[in-house]
Image (cartoon, rainbow, N blue to C red):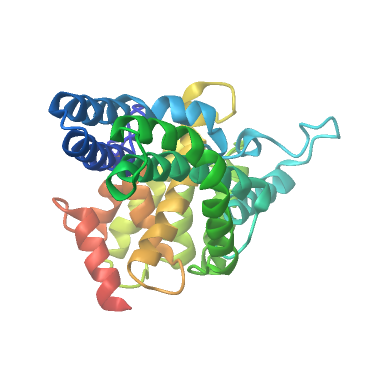
Length: 321
């Protein structure tokens, strides 16, 4: 989802900039060493095109690196066993979201794809750069262009295993903000979904969970008017009461993914703010990214700047730490 809540896939800036910078560096080396400016420019241009248009293909090839596991849209009863009651289903969905994203819980069934994709990616880039530099630093009779092409082919064989070992070691020892504080919020959100007879969590459930679990007393935020906050909760509640939420259409699937993305963004925000736990305010930041329209309206009632809600909320959380 895009930052405006549209269905446009979210583009990763690092992909474009990595390929563009790598292309400029390798293209410059090829142009200088081979004294072929046109070849160097062509190399840089080709890398920029990969940066602009190659990410969707890479997503398809390395789905574990970019996409959530298939169980994101599943139920415990999908394997043929008896379907669970709705309360059990909601508990399962709550734990599924938290456990999949807990940075301190090492899920190697998902991480192996990240390690493999990242190692291959770095092997290609590193091999290409080293291959381009080889004729500059040795007496081998090979052009920089030939060295770069050979390096891109040999890099996944020679360099990728080294990158894989380094990345796997980093994941093993890495620690992140704790997510135990948001379990209560997800429990309330699941009770809201169960109350309305819904089969999945959507952002409105999570926002209601944030407001009702905290009673409006969110760290760093002073509630301007308790009555207006209660009215906001009632508006969300009434909107949910008029909906049927089952995983049968693309809109519901997109909303289910928004809950996952909101928690992921909340963890990233807590890490960026160097705070040890993911709190309600971080979840609001995540919801501002994945569901900006509904979240902004509620935050304005909490006294957040309607023009720059994300920066205002982030600054408040920073001061409250």
